[in-house]
Amino acid sequence: MPKSQIRKKKVYTAPADLNPAQIAAAKASRPSAPWVPALAVALIVLGIAWLVVFYLTAGEYPVASLRYWNLGIGFGALVGSLLVFSRWR
Picture 1 (cartoon, rainbow, N blue to C red):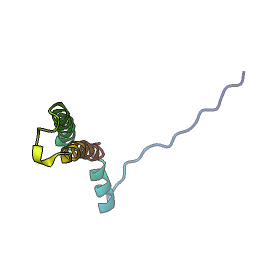
Picture 2 (picture 1 turned 90 degrees about the vertical axis):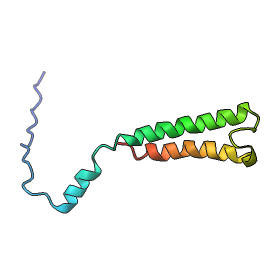
Picture 3 (picture 1 turned 90 degrees about the horizontal axis):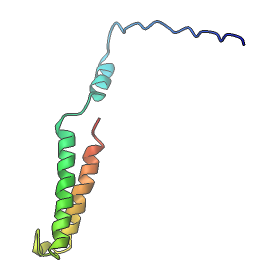
Picture 4 (picture 1 turned 180 degrees about the vertical axis):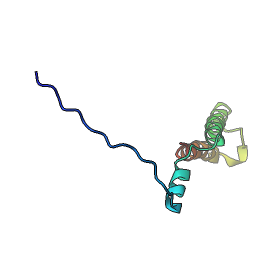
């Protein structure tokens, strides 16, 4: 069986100078702050807890005067967590 040819790789050379666009791109690719996943998880817990309390109390709590807007608040917190998670790197 014939032997395959070996690929030749280029030798890496570090860039000598970074322009402002490259510096901005490097900053944009940094990992996110530690509060981002913590906030997203907190919003998930808050949203689920809000909805569970609303359903278990038959609309009496968390805020009885809001009636079915309580559903909007609970699902809004869940959607907010998705938006925060989209910023997580």
